[in-house]
Picture 1: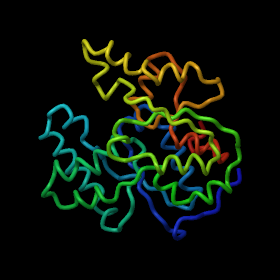
Picture 2 (picture 1 turned 90 degrees about the vertical axis):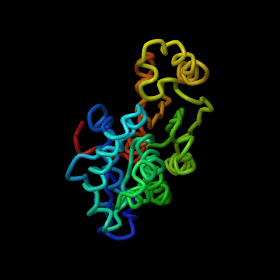
Picture 3 (picture 1 turned 135 degrees about the vertical axis):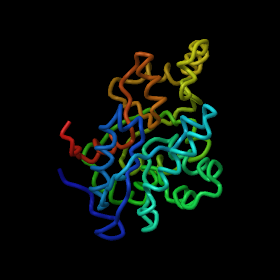
Picture 4 (picture 1 turned 30 degrees about the vertical axis):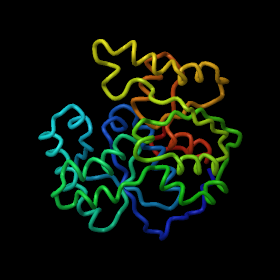
Length: 256
């Protein structure tokens, strides 16, 4: 398919795609589609040559010593990219928020922690620098989407870039004022929390999804939000990377 004009700052523009645990193990197609879109925009997409983790699942459950260990390992793994000023692109909102906001607090004196926090970009933030190329590269027009924003995105990241990208891709997007999906990491899975979890989802999100036409995509970048939708028996949700690849007529390198 025809790709957008290569619009990165130079032919050798590099980005590192952060392979978060959820994408890597459960939704790898998202990473393939993200790489396809970034490559079409002229980026050289690289993957860390060692394990990385944002530490969120550790420190959110009070395991600070373990969180510091995995974060120090992540900083060490990415140091050569940080030294070269290569952006780190996060697909999972909770990872992006953790690395930006929490990493400097968890490792305040760790060399490289501030550099990693400052290097993190969301997928939407990178694409928002190329709205003209995206608009010119749209191959499937008339896409519609219901958008569920992750709680960490509300709190730390914002959605301005996402809105700009969806507009450039000519997606008719309705951003739901739904609050939390209810899963909230491991909260919804814990004993005694199911009713509260589902009540949150039923406030806005699930009724909106049930009422939407079958052709409307349910866009949820957060793995927790996608899991809640799947567990509730609703439609299969998509990530912005998947919707962008579809709009641009790109097929991921995985061939799936």
